[in-house]
Length: 377
Image (cartoon, rainbow, N blue to C red):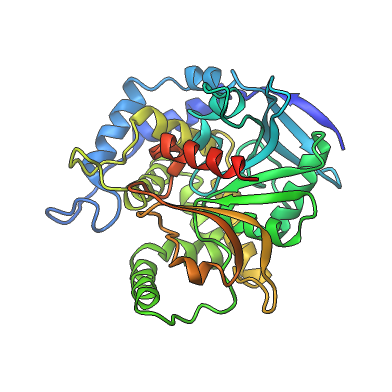
């Protein structure tokens, strides 16, 4: 297995094509007073487009990301994963694989990378950090056919020894928490998992208490209003690709709506995503400049082909499991007793605020909890 240093390219011709498509975009009607209730909000998208054309600096964003050490690693059969790989100077540092989801990227951890590696408090745990891009995303290779999260877990488990780590801790949200469940179940090298979303489900999810019934009722309501994208990307992703691969504004709208709907309420009362235009556009440009919107959706199809996101009957994840339960997460945790049917939960924090993109939205809460969990191991 080979490890090759890598620098993110600007791809000027691709960036110029993207800019031309954004400039040529034609807006259309929306219902009166729509806000975000029917999908992407026109006023926000108009402001985002103006900033994109007049102020956004993609080469500067690439230079910022390239301050980090990037590698591409052959994890078997010539398949390469891209990853940020940062080694701590601390002799007691522990390897940590930290995993993003959709529609995110390694940018989710941009503000905490260095703090994980060289914490400001010498008493805080330090980590050697490995943050891969999912297969089919960004600068990782595209699979020849959809891979589900269990298959991705095996690739991630191969990534760590290729980088010199025979034991490691794992952290994940969104797809990262589903993959983390499979790693916790299948890996002999992973020592513990920290999850910021409820991904892989116990086989028995029957509610037995009023609290569990209330959670299930709410989860069903969220399914009805927020998961049409999952059904589409998990069944007919190629049809969606014909629209999105030719429309940067379409991708921007598809993503922006998720960053609104899956985040905690903006404390200012403004219903924009709780992240600035630069952050939003850099995440979007990672997908656009690598032409990876479509192959990034394949993991949804792969999950359905694998059989879903349920822990096999009779199995339980026995590795120590830490839970950071953010209240506005799309994949919000049920009551602890229900989670413990499938996980050996040794650490649980009910967060006072925060949503799906926890490490971006609430980095202090996220960092503190991950460190606290690591310190117990």
